[in-house]
Length: 467
Image (spheres, rainbow, N blue to C red):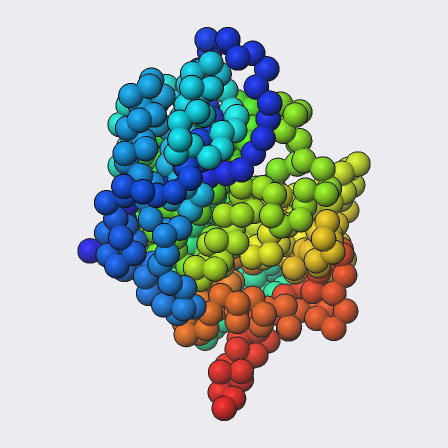
């Protein structure tokens, strides 16, 4: 049975504290200078990484380093002895999120092992002092009924699948089997409903976690995540089949409906770290950050440089460890902002724009490039009047946005991972870019264009056959 420990990653964010004598507890990040005193070792990675995670890292020659080690428990004890309450832990960015007051934070910041402190968000939820257990991933894979790949049997899912030649992968038998996909979003309550996905949800969703409320279920909150999930995972013959119905999905609730703060980026980074530990192959995040409830946290276009946001930094760490991270480019193309959002600026992010029925940029799809001139979005998929399963599981809902184009692409990338399992994450994404409709002339509206997954599969096979 693979081992999966809850090991967290976190952020860099800076907002000045206004009232040092304010008795109200808030969430702050406290970064440590080192990992002295940790009981873990890079020579025993199986103690904090799953077998799947280690196998994925070996494929891309990513060594387990001190960055991967859990934070020092001795440092944590010194914080809690002074009244701080540990909220989250980060091994990649070597620190913890704590609930404490601004005045108490000053004393914590003076400790010799504390490197940085930053304000994250107001404390909006209470929970027990012990961190909840991580989700288990030892359930068997779902048994999904195979049907002929055509419009009759695939129903309303066929149009968007076939527009990217994903139906060719399905006809070859590549529908995501054996691939573990993480979905980061605002909640997944509809997954609790009978037949929402069309087969055994328990087996299809072997683990889920709520980073916002710090409990063991993400099957609550916004229905947005359930809508996103359905475009990939649904298996309703004659009604709706998604782009990767045989994959398994791990669900993370990272968005807080009570307000926008940088803590959501912390949650995002933590979810990626958990996904790495679990051995996830592909991640979908239909999320983006530009402005916040606390305007002092707002980003500027210059921050879209691939190295500012904690979520962006976490994506690059995850990519270096062999994970494919697909994220929506953003829906600000018709707004004053216009640009992609964070973390679509990450070098390791596969950022997805939206196209309409005519394969032209959807009016809302955000523009690139990044602040440092890199091409974004990477590719663009269907994002106008996309069919998805309704929240009650008993019908369809039409939806617009890069929130939909991203999971449609994510599901087909999962199919490619199944089809060419020896390919690295970089090789797979290079193949999708090289065979997309604008591969020879990428731009800042559609990136490399509309993907052609049949061509990407052939490209990968041919490349791997070359001496």
